[in-house]
Amino acid sequence: MRMYDIIAKKRDKKELTTEEINEFVNGYVKGEIPDYQASALLMAIYLNGMTERETFDLTTVMMRSGDLVDLSPIEGVKVDKHSTGGVGDKTSLIVGPIVAACGVKVAKMSGRGLGHTGGTVDKLESIPGFKTALDRDEFFDVVNKTGISVIGQSGDLAPADKKLYALRDVTATIESIPLIASSIMSKKLAAGADCIVLDVKTGSGAFMKTVEDSVKLAQEMVKLGENAGRRTCALITDMDVPLGRNIGNSLEVIEAVETLKGNGPEDLTHEALYLAANMLEVAGKGDEKECLKMAKEAIDNGSALECLAQMVKAQGGDESVIRDTGNFAKAAFSHEIRSPYEGYIAHMDTEGCGIASMMLGAGRETLDSVIDMAAGIVIEKKTGDHIKRGDLIATLYANDKALFDKAEKKYLDSLKISDGEVKRNPLIYAKVSKEGVQYND
Image (cartoon, rainbow, N blue to C red; front, side):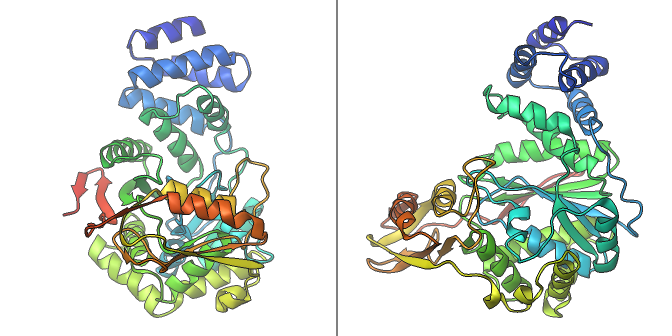
């Protein structure tokens, strides 16, 4: 079969067969199909979409292009959680220990951050000594002993996705729901969990900017998970405002620990509890209401915090920073941003806030960028808050004072001020499951 004919078929809005999709993905991974032909097919998919069956076939062949993780050596039900990425999104550091404390195993492979979005692996590596690279036996052993382990994603997990994503990134074919869904789910399915909860972000700091598009993506991914025999659901959560108060690696770990101690900001605590409850629900621990009660109890009785501390210790990290976050290394310099305005914060360009943090050294501009683990931003005022001239609205942290001026300008440019009161967005817009879409009032 010729690649030319496959391209022409999708160009003409016809459905590709399983064999044609396999031929494309496997041929491209092996180097038998040139970039220009792969790009042409990706653009045809971008323009004409894919059917449910085509998307499932694409996901399956990408999943099988590399290692398939067998989690059977881990006792009990294994649940995974994936976020589509955002600013200040440290929920994995909170929900994983909560779920583990409630008796469900969390064997999680996470990624690094790039650009304005942070990565869970980077955050964990701000803990002195913490190892995110474990071999499979070590990984399984930590999960069996502590209930949870988070490691860096293997380079052999869905390598077809990595190669195709790089091509999509330079051919303007990123924003395609079938391609995004198959990209995410090929890796999640290859990682081997029994159940999957998806945190699909929406808003200015998210990949999907509207609730409508976020729901469409979530529906596609839930269908892929369920069709693969994994119990799957998704929450549509707000990323039009940074989540919590802290942006930056060690700063976010500190805030996660405070949340597990019951002292976290209201928005972060609320979202983490509902994500944890849905992870417990898909794992068969009860309905959402019962699981929400369990999640709250795991924070109240300290068992979730203890799970995090034990995981850190088991992976070579200094658990003293979890017991006392004052032991984290601090940035050499801080800089207060005082409000030049009076009024209400009407909107925060969340991506812009993330870029300001990256400018301080907290994120990567390229894959080779070196992160300053102590750098970042602590937010004092958020969307809906009233501010007066001179009020403290954020504090910047860096190990180079010369970085403050540009980062402050970027942060202030990310704020929109109004004279009147502003209504805050819901934290959770909807839940998507095999039963359908349930919108929150």
